[in-house]
Structure formats: C-alpha cells, structure tokens
Image 1 (spheres, helix red, strand yellow):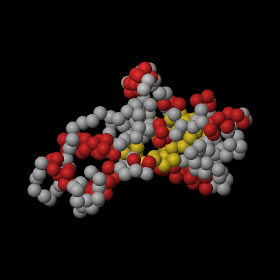
Image 2 (cartoon, rainbow, N blue to C red):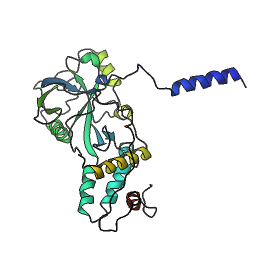
Image 3 (cartoon, rainbow, N blue to C red):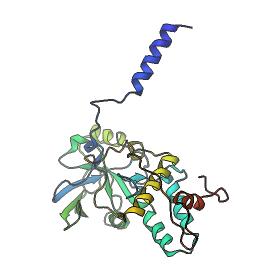
Image 4 (cartoon, rainbow, N blue to C red):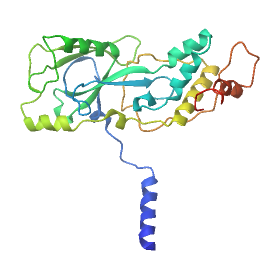
Length: 283
C-alpha cells in the first residue's frame, strides 16, 4: 500500500468537501426573463434534450420553502408533498381539500431561447406560465406559422413586459414576427447553440425525499402559528438574484397537522397519525 498516495488522495477529497469560494454561478447565462418594462425579441431554439418538442413541462412547489422547489415527480420519483395531498383528499374535511389544492405542484414551462441583441450569451432558458404555453402551442398549430423553431425558416417573437400594480415581476405577452428568418446566418454559431444548452433538471437543486418532507413539516408548523401565503402562479421566475438554487433552505422546527373531529392530541402525534405504518406511504 502506497501510504503517500493514500495521504494525497485523502487530502484531495477533504479539499473537495470544503465549501468553494469565489465560484458563484452567473445565472443570467442560464435563465432569461425581462428585467424591465418594454419589448424584447427572442427566438425559440430546438431543444437539445428533446428534438421534437422545445417545451419542457416542470412541476414546482411554491410557498413551501424559501425558494421554488422542483417536485421530485419531475425525475419520476416519489414526492412527499404529492403523497401528502393525496392523503388529504382521502378525508371528508373541506379544509384538508383546500390545503391539498394549495400544495399541489404548479405547472411551469421552460424553453431554450436566443435573445436578439444578446446572442453572445448563448442559449438560455425562458420560463413562462401555462397561459403563454397554450398560446405558443396554438401558434405552432396555426398553418401560417407551424414550426417556429425551424433554424432556417422559423419566426422570432416579440415579448412585451409590462408592470402590474401590487405584483412583483412583469406581465408578459408574446406575438410572432410576421416574416420568417433564419436563426443565424452563421452555420457554426447555429450548431453551437443547438449543441450547448443548459439542462434545467441539472441546474436545479434536487431535494431528497426526507429533506422535502422536512420542508413540508416546517411549512405546516409555520402555518399553524401564522396563516401563510401560497402563490399559485408567481410572476417571478427562477431568479439568480434570489436564487441560490443549488442550496437547500435552512431547516426549521418540526410540525403537526391538526385532525379535525377527533379528540385533541399532541401535535406531533396528529401528523404521525396521518402517515402511520398502516397506510401505503413511505414515512
């Protein structure tokens, strides 16, 4: 056994385990959204991960943690918040059903785009709501437009961002430009954009089942002390300014859920009873 080699490897692993400094990621090169009111011209680009569909549907948990949380179902895995909402709907309590609806993951859609005038930043991910998603699908279904991502004969879009009173972010509307244009006259640049795109599920922090369960517990505990707010369709998308998206929010204390119509129990017991060993949930 080469003890010097082992010592060197141990030192290397210890260094890897230490927090890195000075390596803050520039998320403006990953995500794009309007930063001010006005009009912006973009081009949807064929997706690297799915050649047949530029749109990636992602389900998000909002309001449960400090930052939006990507549901584990996006990776085909079991999600404790989704499990919890299913459990709530097995009861006849209207409050449980309302809570389940609030906790249901919300659909957000992402697509790779090139922003005109900022081509040097490469392909970035544009996040938008279900409403805009349906509008884009309708445009694609319109024979006057069809595949607007076509690199040779596609269409640019104009994004109009306007401020909404008493709401963060901007209201967005999109319309296609009337003329077909190439993605770029530079074939090499087109190939670069097609082959180099951020991958959403690799960019986002992935919670473990247990960590996400803990976030749910903390949320319910906070809701018992003070009525919280659940945002069903936030105006602000992934944002590098408030997004250390690869860091999990700090943990808080544990909680319980009151079971109506039964004798009052200890709070921890109430939550445990919802997910006892006799059901099919892996708590």
